[in-house]
Each structure stands twice: as C-alpha cells, then as structure tokens.
Length: 272
Image (spheres, rainbow, N blue to C red):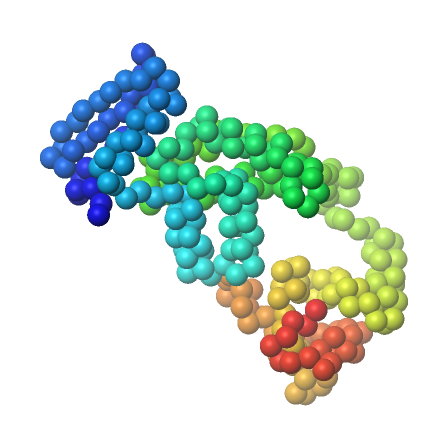
C-alpha cells in the first residue's frame, strides 16, 4: 500500500542551521524540520517513509526499469549487461534514491576506487572506475528525467586518475598503426590465422571489414552467407541504427578462414 496521491517527502536541503526536510501531505500542506547534520536528516526521512508506508524507488528497482528502457531503445543485450554491471559495482548494496546525496555519491566513488576486487585482490584501474562513474551519472540523470530524483546527486563527482594513453597521446596522430606497422601486423595475423588461430582470424575481420569488436563477437554461423560462394557475404542484421544493419562482402583472403570457423557448428552458434 502506497502513500496517498500527492503526499511526498522533500530534502534534505542545506539550511543555515543545518539540513531541512519537508513533508507535504495529500492536501498540499507543508511541514518542515531542520536537523544539525545531513545524516540525522536522512535517518528522519527513512523513519518518515516507514510511517507513511510509502513505496519508493531504490537503486536496485530503478536499475531494473533502466534495463528495460535500454532494451526498448535498441541496445544490445551484451551492452545492457555491461551497463548493469557498472552500476551495480558503484552501488554494491541497494540504496533508496531519495537518500542519495552528493556526499554519499562521493563516498561511494571513493569506495569503488579503493575496494579490492575478488579476482585480483586489487582496486580497479582508473579507466574502469571512471567508466563506471560515467555510466552511473547517465543512470541517475535518467532517474531525474523520470521524476524519481530532484537532481542528479552524482553530477558533481569528478573522475580521479589518468586514463591509459591512446591515439594522439601516443604520437600516432589519431591512428593506432602506421602503414609499415599495419603491414607487419597484417602479415603476422594472417600467418597465425592460417595456422588455425581463431583469434587472429577475428582480428583480421576487424582490420579488413572495419567491424566493431562487439559486432565480431556477436556474429552467428547463420550470418555467414554461403549460397553463391563459400563465405562471400557476412550479415549484420541487428544494430542500434539502420546504418549499422548491413551486409559486408568478404575479401577472398578471409573467406576460407570464416568457413573454417563455421565448420561443424550449429547455425545459432557463435562464429568466433
């Protein structure tokens, strides 16, 4: 059973004497209380919500709704899983959205940066926690758009640490490989692929067909067309945009490698 329509709790808002919490009843009448600390104000809100028996969104329930939204928008399942993983990493336990504050989000980000992972027993890298922070900001901004939050409490949290250098910062002027480097890379990848290295075959697909990593890893055997010639076309039927849904002509050098990768696999099996 939820609170009466229109009945809500606002705050805590910074006040000259501390932090103010406002209770608006169903008739629109306002009653406010000021607390010395934000912690006491948040605790009062928790108790008030229990007394009102008011249903509210938490980071956990909001994330479930966010995943549905991303799926309806056309995001791939793998992308949604990564987004959910990032947000759950930022919020290791469920928190009521109304209890999120800038201070709490700062504390959660600090915990994310310093908390050892189960696999490595070390904190995550700067690239990881900065990406997680970015995903969380987008998620909370979406919650604001839904009216579940008054403002994004994570908006002012700044990413800490330097990202790994890429592209121009490595002196490549935006290109990872120069011509000679690309030729050497291609020759080595082709040698490994022809020797049976499936990863090298996938790498050649990226180089010669310009496909994204997610597009390569999500290709199914049924996406490889063999009606006119063995492995002459590769279909990409699912993508975020119409332009992403396309058919690629496979170069002669790649065809036997893709046919071998599909050999003895069921049509719905992954190509790589």
